[in-house]
Amino acid sequence: MTRPTLSLTKGLKAKSPLALTFRKGLRLPCRASILNSLHPCRARFLAFRISDFFRTSAFGFRILSISIVLATLDTLAADSPGALFRQGVEAYRSGEYTVAAKAFRQSAFDLPASGTYQNLGLAEWHRGRVGPAILAWEQGLWVDTFNTAARSSLQYARKTAQLESPTLTWYEVVSTWLPLNWWTWIAGGSFWIAVGVATLPALFRRRKAGWHQAVAALGLMLFLLSLPALFGVHTRCKIGFVLQRETPLQLTPTREGQVITLLSSGEPARVERARGEYLLIKTSRGHGWIPKELFARLSP
Image (cartoon, rainbow, N blue to C red):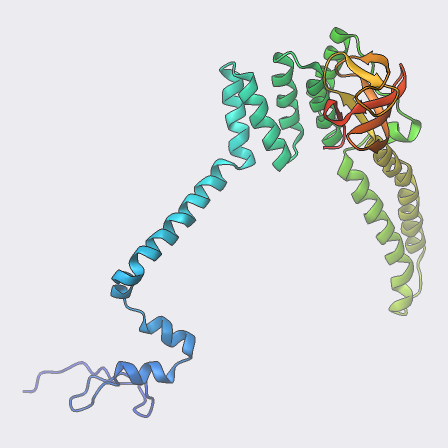
């Protein structure tokens, strides 16, 4: 009685060059014929052997390439904003305020965030640097006007150092009601909604309904109301703060310029124009020139 055997050829076409068969008397196609029938890219992939990676001529180069890639990834991970923020928190808790301020400043430069500016201001305040602390808290409110911690810190710092707040126009006050990016989204969204509702019915040959006109009017109204706020954001970019104590406000943009008055650290001012290494600013106590390295603008 013949023992039953399992057939491995059912469903395979003998005419196919890649069809595998285990019947006695048939030869499997060689590796070269398979590679010649494939796409060049696939052929190169199949032609690669594991032993090729360890060839003496290319092994060192491949290992070096992999090491460079891994080192680059580790460096990027170590210098990421999140890693810098955690380093700053650890340094702040251990009392190393200089290291904390450096880490928070670099993290805020890579990824501006209101909480990062809040911590940067605290670190600078503990270092005794009133100007950079006030600048950091103002930048935190610039990013997120709902940051109550930064607002409270500003009030405490100005009361302690006897400093005044920047004088704002009515449209600049309006620009502080919402975060910076919100006004951009409101203006852009309301404009295109008004345009779309006003033009799409005519393009699709549809009759305009009453709600079409109402939505278009609402979008146009929001767009017009957001324009003063956007202008206020633009003019607030010129506001800055003095970084060092007893900074001289000079009559001319030269080293030998006559000193008009001495400005306190953290005192607000508006930049009017620049010339070389000096800025022409206007404060509540005078109007003159100040070196650029002793002054920083509100806009990060």
